[in-house]
Image (cartoon, rainbow, N blue to C red; front, side):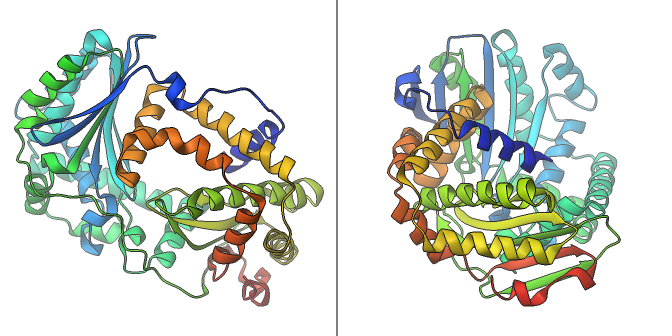
Length: 437
């Protein structure tokens, strides 16, 4: 459903041509500084008293192995059960007093550990957040409780088609490589992780050099520096240095099927994309958006073959693109998908239409950056992927530089050798058509 809502918004906004400012014109002042080895980015925004403070634990799945998938999430969730400064229930009691919560968002390139609070409670909320990273109690009974809850979540996800489809497709695309690991863990890995391993992970991985702190809101630099210095700045520096995963991945066509008694069939296929530092990155993003719109028109609107169809672009340090659909008629749907990919690879887009599409991207970008949390992640992405948060302001320029020739070129360069995962009725799967992708 999320993909469909996003696509409907995309199609609707594609016809708008608003006058929007650049990031530099709306930036109220962003600075970067180092506090005892912790990299900090602060965007001062005095429009209101809301403050987002995120700690990005760099590396994501690169910090994991097949046997340790989920260990970082297990550690962070267990830290909610008590720390040295806030033992037991005092962690949650301290947060209740502030009216704030601390969220955990694992992903392939980093784990976000952060909060959104108000200026009056920023110091106290930050102290709880930092102490959970620095001094979790990691009591054995509490860690076991967290383990069981994580196992329950993994088992539930394995029975739901979309989460299962996505996990299997990532694993197939990145066999034996970090992006193929699940940051939330697998049933096997979560059962095998021991308490000493969790404690060792905390000791070795919670180091200053692995942390990027991004704060967006109405707070002064001196206040942020003082808080970080008295907390995360006391951690060992470590020797971590961010590097993107190697571009090598599983190549060549592949197909993984699983028979499931579903009312519709699920299909997701990925192909290898460029690194975030490659000029093709934004061009492929545009190409995927064009393809999504055409899929929606031909497959969803005109033929009513699918309730949900998409051409996803995975925004990572090393990207992937793909095709996704739920359908009762895989053969007819795949024929249309292949036809639209062929058209994108063969024909040039209308320049006026491409300009409207790019303008839509710009509009959507500013809509996404309305909240402090969204701005924090956008700044973090530029800092991590490109080495400089200021390059976030180039996003608009990079999109506007994409030409019809670029879209056709990247469609030909990357949209091939799909690796598919299929869930549903196996006798409905046209393997001969999949061989054409």
